[in-house]
Length: 335
Image 1 (spheres, helix red, strand yellow):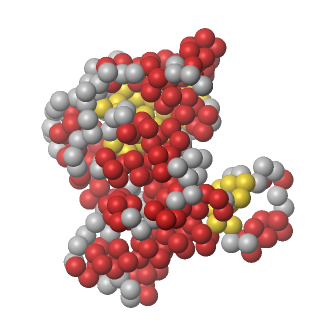
Image 2 (cartoon, rainbow, N blue to C red):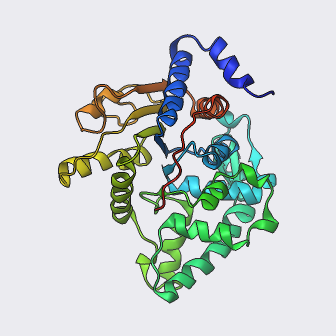
């Protein structure tokens, strides 16, 4: 498809309802970059297993995403896909699976994520064997590292290169490690590698459980990042899904303004892609205006909620932004 074809198609056909909101959100994204703004991406769900790296990696390389908060599952699953893609199994009729058929997948050591099965041996065990050496080495040296820093060490070590089963330009974690992109990973323990790390601590392979740093320290680092970045740039918030990947980072503004009494600007843009319907007490289903009461957004902040499948919407918005430009000179800030 030629240059600009996707964005031209979107502009011509996406005129109403969620489709029109997609265009408005993409245009506002581009406008923020034109104003030398930074975009912060919050990513929940299983977007790495959905291979969002096909578009996200290029967004990172071209400075359209400047920091990320995500679940650790998204960190590890991008790397799983990088080294074991050919061994994945797709289950198109996953809605029809019986408990007995699910058990057969388990016996084949296939871990199902909706319609896609992650292979235990080729993906999870392969990474475990390599990352354990990094954990143990850091532990012996008395180092303390954030989860994403451990993964960056793995990516930069070269140990994975002969295992690549996709074009490495389609791995967003590889792009992020090359950019040294700031990443924040709250609740990393709720992941496959987090579970495995706990097991190795219990076995005595790792002596100090705090060798890998956790959420409170990530919040402190995020506070410092936001305060520094917002002095020079407006910062937008692009959210895929809900939960901790979104609520943790967006709360940095009230931490600064209310708890630390520092006069920092609110988020300058907000967009959420979610298939959660508005409901009582749901964070994922809360409308953006609710965030005004928590001093995260302002009444004039451009706000968009696209009620659709992020695996469809996010690549379209990313491609729109890449094709339409955004002449921002802003670069990813150092941690």
